[in-house]
Image (tube, rainbow, N blue to C red; front, side, top):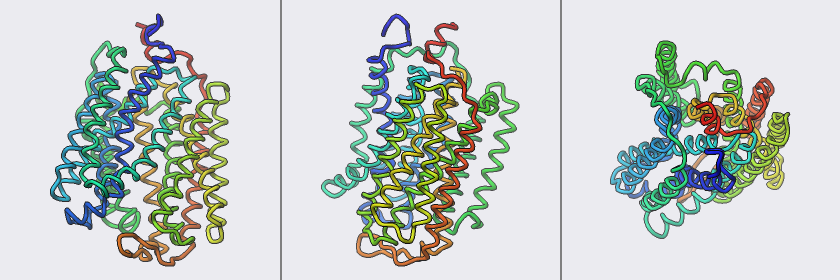
Length: 486
């Protein structure tokens, strides 16, 4: 570390980034590694009806606890929060590996998610600590690269381990990987200072926030699985989420140190940046989740071929995030890169909707690549703008809140597009053939409407980004600002 204290040289920054991204890779890998092993898990443990919850339990718990980790990181420091998340993740992995019933496995996956949600949010927070906003965009591109790499490597690794060893190894492998991640993170973060003053964590606010998020995510998940947004049990989950959310708001107004401070909620950059991320990820995830169904139904692809075809939007997202991230530090009008990306996403998804019934495979792949580029370009602009607009003491909760809203957007996009396709008969067209799924002919209008909704979501994201205040990017890191102000 140089004389500037926390204003570290590039080599030290890279070491810190590598350390926290190693921890983040643990969590992102486990979002996709399980899918290929689901048939083996169902055959051995039974309870095939609940197989989807092996994936869903992880995603819900990881999303619900994200703001809590941001608060803990601000109140107690980054290092204890990160190492606690790694420990919980490893405990959850051990529970999954030793599971003898489907219920135990799903419970273990929920514990894994509690750790995994912290790993993702804290990696972004630590990078925001040591890298000045003006140069932070390119590091957000590295996060996108880890995410995309894990999305591609996860299914391949999961398939190999479950086929040649045993499905439990997809969880056992996390023990040595977790130890390596903890070692790298410990070396990387040992130079980071702890907060000067320990702050309360607001346990009641945390319980209310996690409860509201969990019930909302359950409702969105059920909407995508069982009958759409208007189903009675879905509406019941939404009603409970609203009650918890209202209680959380009332508590936040009275608490001396609330989980999410009112100054964060009132910050216009945080609000519009988070909303932009919500709609961008709703469109992107909605498209990427349901395009494999489209490829199977319209182009006759097998499930394996359709899955491989989804590499295109992942590559596009990395390209978009890296390009926008690297350019935003070089131009004062950095919002233009995000708005241009979203315009590309709107155009590509609109053409996909218009050509849904006649498009060739190469045409679909090119359009998916452009959707990924456009959605990827928006993310670093919104995220860095929010981090640049808050006090360094609120960096953890602001970053985690944006990540949380982004995940909610993804769940909303999947539920909404899923409800459309359910209405047009996609679920009734699904049938099982051998070990793989197959889709019979279904109403093609469903995909036209779904892709059109994704395009509308990108338009809304662009409107939010256009409305977001564009503040000059700081040239010093958050820790350096803390040192200068004492």
